[in-house]
Image 1 (cartoon, rainbow, N blue to C red):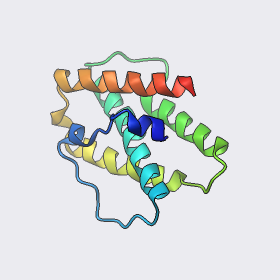
Image 2: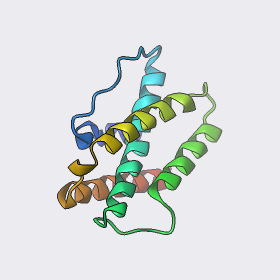
Image 3: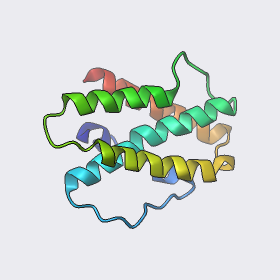
Image 4: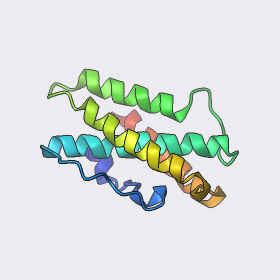
Length: 127
């Protein structure tokens, strides 16, 4: 998880200046899990929206299904405390922001989303 975050793929600006809700983060692990959900889930949701708009190619499996699979594999292989709820919280927050700002996703923005999603997939394959 830290490897992906270290890549600098944070997508805050991609959702029309989305702001995180003012929820308290109990631990840094929970915060990292939330950020990971924002990154992986949020990018997947953006990718699927761009596919729906015809700006990115459709694949056999939706990006969101791929992201769910990634998060599920991480959950089952992680020996620490379960952080999946925090990952889902981050993803849900991004999905809400994306749905509220669909018009923000133009051909140009979707090209960037496609590149970010490709980086995430490449990083996850290395694991």
